[in-house]
Length: 131
Image 1 (tube, rainbow, N blue to C red):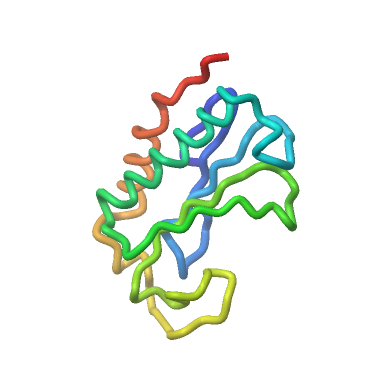
Image 2: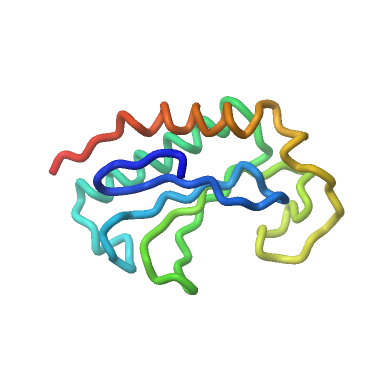
């Protein structure tokens, strides 16, 4: 786990092909984003946006993918994934077919994963709920 609050936690997904892949997991069990109150939705998206901004600032990805699928795990969580034109699946979704072989993707990042995690934690720790 990278960091957490009373309402959410942030983890970095252990996926060697996509090392800058974070997940924001809502603490309360709800399946749909619309089940949250307006202030909880704002808090959740503030966390997602803070992570996205860190990924853009530190890694300069080709694109950041955001997803809240929940088909397999019907518990509200957001995927925040830095994508690069060199990654194994680009421009396809990470769940799609690989387009190329990439060795150590983490070694191609502009910062270490430990530094990235620290920056993500620092960026989201200030997000507070109004409730």
